Image (cartoon, rainbow, N blue to C red; front, side):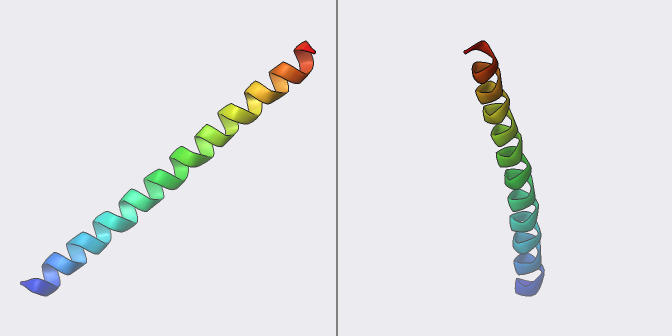
Length: 42
């Protein structure tokens, strides 16, 4: 029983980490595109 709960928690942590990584990459791309647009405007 305890082993199954531990495995489920670890699987959830891995899924959460992978999702967070993709979100951070997306935010980085958005910030980069805003910076490039500002450079073109100046």
